[in-house]
Image 1 (cartoon, rainbow, N blue to C red):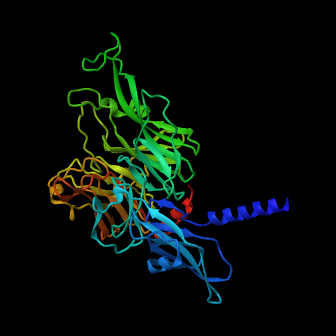
Image 2: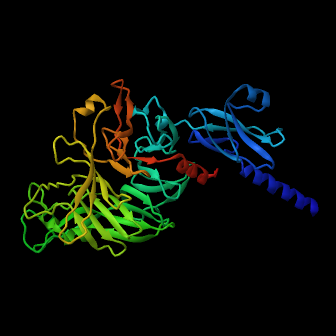
Image 3: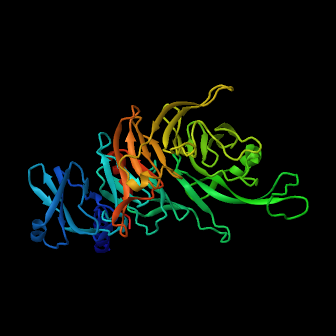
Amino acid sequence: MNRVFTTLLLLAISYQLRAQITPSEGRVLNYRLIGFSFPQKQKVALNIIEIAAGIYNNEEDFNKNIIASFSGATNKIIGEVPAFGKEYTWRSVCINKDSSKTKSTLHRFSTKINEQADTNAARLRIIKNAKKYKDAYIFLDDTHTLYDMKGSPVWCLPVKDKTVMDLKLSPQSTITYIDNNKPFETDYNGHILWQRPADTNAQNPQVYHHEFTRLGNGHYMTLKNESGHWKLPLFKDSIAQNVNDSVRFYQTFFYETAEEYDEYGNRVWTWSSLDYIKKCDMYNRRTADGKYDFDLHENSFYFDEKDKVIYISFRAISRVIKIKYPEGNVLNSYGALYEPGMVKMDNDLFCNQHACRLSKEGYLYLFDNNTCGSPAIPKIVMMKEPTLTNDTMKKVWEYQCTIDGMHASRKENLNFPKGGNVEELPDGSMFVSMCGPYSKIFITDRNKDVLWSAVGEKYDTVAKQWMNMTLYRASIIPNREELEKLIWNAGDKL
């Protein structure tokens, strides 16, 4: 019995020690920036990670091919290998306080070949080198890849689909995104941590779009399309669609909802734009041929969890509304209202906007596609909300985007039809992602000094030249500390 117990104990200790070693033997990694960990030893003055290019089983061959080493005070060290699609061997070396060395056994791993991270096919071309935020990292949703500020890919989402959008870091040091109209959460290793349950209605599948965010309370919020078959107002209108009887007229249309889910995928809150449509000025909005036009195109939201309010952006009507959470009642509406017979709406503050958020000072800011004017070059607009009943929204800061550094063929078309993103950074600077097809990304401070800029590009094998990629949004990990939290939060789960 004692022998059996001893054997089991040794096996348990061996498993525990192996579990502390990352990357584990034979792992295929979807990243080049790697968290190395190994069992902690006593009386160690310094820990070193040594990496050799290739797969080796003996120390002599390993020593001849060492290409990099990284040191640290703890048994967790982050290091970078040169390339994707390569094999590597590594070991830890402990420098003891008496200057002796303790070397681990050799461990082997490889980095995954991924065409999205292939710099011969896609790249983040730097226009202006970073003045600040040199240790930040950029997600591009078009390539679902993470780049450093020099334009080198360091991580790639291990999916084959090319429909990834809104790829970004969560407050819980995970990664959220939408793929093929469904929301997902993953860790640094690419393991799915959360996704919406499969649709039960095959004839009307749920379509999630534009934005998916993990909240500070651990829940998830996203936007979803719904379809409505709605009775129009009680009067005979010869241009109404779908006559179902001789008295009432019906019209089928799409609308959007904002929905909150808990960690188990249960829907715990929802807000429908259909209720808003029925109560606001949308009865006055008509298409050019006179039909009702209920397409509001809800494209972003911001949840102020502290003050329990949600801002929802409607691109098609150039409007942002503010609602109370969880009640759902509309507290305010920013943007012009439709009068009877109006087809086109002009908004002096912003037009066809994306990505509304609140600044640290409490100002509402957004990416203004600015498509009502000519030329339609986007702006970043920051506004102060009205505090009195008769007060109005006022601009307090504005940045005019530029098209320098972009491909010449794109400069001929100054229309920014969709997309775009803006995010305030810790020092008040703004990270801006101009939408496709221009795909310029930059950081500007409040004095409008550009601190860094780049353009996302793909190589056109037919034209044999680099062209701007069709970027929807980019996002930023603002510093190395946040990246390291993401790396160590993943562990080495298989």
